[in-house]
Image (tube, rainbow, N blue to C red):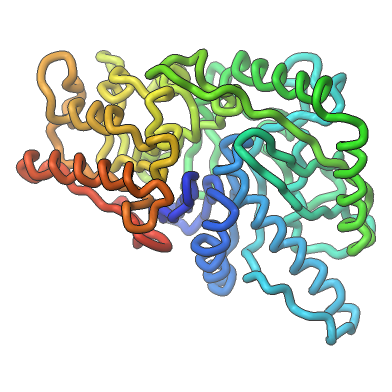
Length: 434
């Protein structure tokens, strides 16, 4: 397994590659950082004849989905270009973007823009967010449903594209392991096979999706006026006309309240709680991908997956620390119970993340004493901490300066147990797990 960690502003953007060459793009970070750093790398994949076997969107926050929707923008623009070029219109200009690789499937949870369609059991609700299905490459027939992604996002409000599309219209499925339904943790957990990747969905749970659905419906009822929705639909139709596509709608959602307490689940937003979290295995190597999920859900999901030992612990090769190292999503219990050879901290100092106390809790779980120390037999092994930003490039450089200082100080006292890396630009060289 290989991991490529991109600079993603305040967000996440990670490319996982299996030993047999399958690629999973885990989130896209912010729009600008995706354009600058991830898009060129994905273009190189395309030129090498590779594809994105899965685009995995953990949840609908700007710093995770923004880059993915820029990816869709690129696909849309290139589809328009190829349509004109194949029809003999050689004067039609190429897009200014780099052409991305083909996308085979999308994993993403969202709800319909009509409140009534969101009722009923979670397991029966079809995932409504089909904008990403625009990444169909193989067919240009007029009856194939297409769409563009013109996403305007902010921390308070995000607008997503949606379209109701039957599976027969598109050659690329949404959430195919769940037959197009919402992806969530079931007991027993089903293993999804993508080449040599064995993947288990360890979160969200049904109650977390219920909370997200409640907030979504409240937004639709109270804030999404008919005028707003019609304006969005009109913009979507104009894009659709470029390819003589069938009509589609956009759906909206609201982001909840800011968090304020370490590990307090009540202070974490519903979209974060509903993060799709994955345990990915390839030839005995495991990566824990947590989005912006909460530590209780992580531990509960790992227990459901049956990977915790008799002490309630597990060791993985890679642990993507949840929610940019926020204190609202991590807890000393998580640090003790889940140890790793590599810890990934995605964040640029926004809201003081990665949080210094969270970083210290992970260090204490490996080098501390008494109850702070993990019971995992691997606790005393060497480990590496990866940060996808640093003081010199971070928007919130003062905090990243403090992070660098703290990590360097801890490493100096670790007798070689801690190695660290801070990313200045682009991406780290692929992290290879032998």
